Every structure is written in structure tokens, then in C-alpha cells.
Image (cartoon, rainbow, N blue to C red; front, top):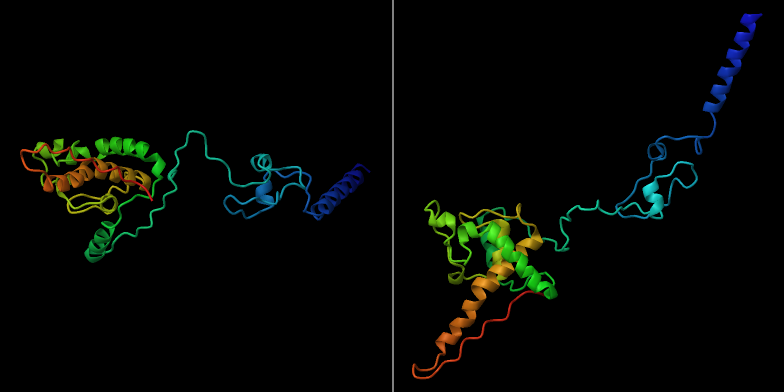
Length: 236
């Protein structure tokens, strides 16, 4: 009798399990990983249709943002491109492409950074230059940095003597030139433009405005007015 009761109980229990396992799966009583059970493909920053609204288990981060899948960066994280400047350059594959790109870059006389931020950009450019470039190029842009003065390295040109523009400076920072390697791995695209702005406005632009003044100088017995420094150049 006892064995019969156990058999009947086992049969009913097994039947109950089988019937429940064959039931509808669109709304199970408990789901530990709803994003695995109800797979939904999201695009970055897309507003989802809140695939879990009909179920007990929802993803809290999505629910708090009304279904938006793009979340804010972690507090304290550093944006990789906060300037929104996209580098449209393609790395040259040979010397002909490099030289053509370098020549074309000389026609670029303005940076894509915002003109109203010029003073801040120049200040950051100065800091970056002194930390990254001055070891060879010198704090005065004369090519007499500590490495050159030590005798370990030579041939670094003086900016004032070079035919450069904001665009060509940025091009060299990105691709390198002669013995100088690329600094695209150390400086993001926005900061490369800031260094280019600083170098041009500090070391090159004043010499360009002084040269015509010297050529048109009055005779020696006439007091010549001081040359006006060229306005700082930035922006489109």
C-alpha cells in the first residue's frame, strides 16, 4: 500500500513538472537574467522599446532613463575626444603621399577649434608644448632644447626660420617628419591643433609681421614706429 502511494505521488509530481515545462514562455514566473532570456539587439544611444516592461524583471539603468540604452560615462572618466574634432587624415603610405600631404597642409591657416576658446587653447598648447616638445625644440622654439644642448641630438630647426603654417605643424605632429616621429599616440587630435596654434602664434607669426616692417623702415634719422604684432590666428 505504501509503495502504491509513493508511485502515485511520483507520477503526479512528474506530470506536474512536465506540464509546467511545456507552458508558455513569454511570461515565465521568474527570470534571473532577462537580457539573456529575452535577447534584444540595441544600437548605441537608441531608445529601446523597453522589452522588459511586461515582465517582473527589468534592467534598472534602462528603466530610469525611460528605455534609453546609452548611459552616461562613469563619473571621473576622461573623454577621448571632447573637442568633437574628427581627424580626416589618412596616414601616408609612401614618401610621395607624405610629401603631397605636407605641401597641402601648408595651405591650412586656421584650426577647426572654436575661435572663442583661443586663449584657453593657447594656454593648453603652451603647457603641452613645454612638456612634450621643448626637450628638443626648446622653450623659445629655437631648436636648442636640453637634449640638443647636451650634444645627444642635433639638427632641430628654429621655427622662425621655417616655412610653416598651423596646418603644416599639425601635419608633422600627426605624421612626423625627418628624424621626428609621430605624436598622434601621445596627443589627441584636438591637443595637436592646440600645440600647432601655440607654436605658430608664439614663434612664427611675430616674425612674419616684423619682416615687412623692417623692409619698409624709415631712414636712420627718422624714428620708426614699432612693428605691430600680427593678430593671433585660430579658427574657422
